[in-house]
Length: 171
Image (cartoon, rainbow, N blue to C red; front, side, top):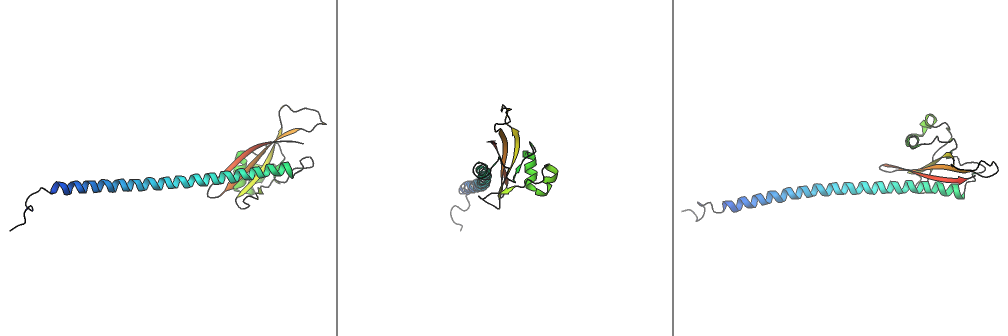
């Protein structure tokens, strides 16, 4: 004698529906896991970008602080300032920081080293270049002239950020 209900197919649809729901929940769970992993990677990349950007910006601000408070621009530029007008460009700086030995081919002034920042001496550096006399300056030789400078801060820490800051100084 067989048990009642084993010969009928009444429970078949309930089991099939439960299996379909289980498969759908599994697919949704796997998709949610992949989305979470992608979001975590994007968040990490944003953190790295912001950290590098702020360290590079800090290095550039440190250079500005040194120009304003420590350096005497009338008597001479710091060694990390390229004095040849317009020689330092974003493209040059990118290559220059990548491999300082190539600066002889990129810059006419081979004596312009980048300077390690006190913020993070291992990862953050800065360098500057003179862009020339500011437009509209007086031609009077007895008056100090306002000069435009480009200051580049850089940080390399799981990625690279380079920040260019314009600066004007009278000397």
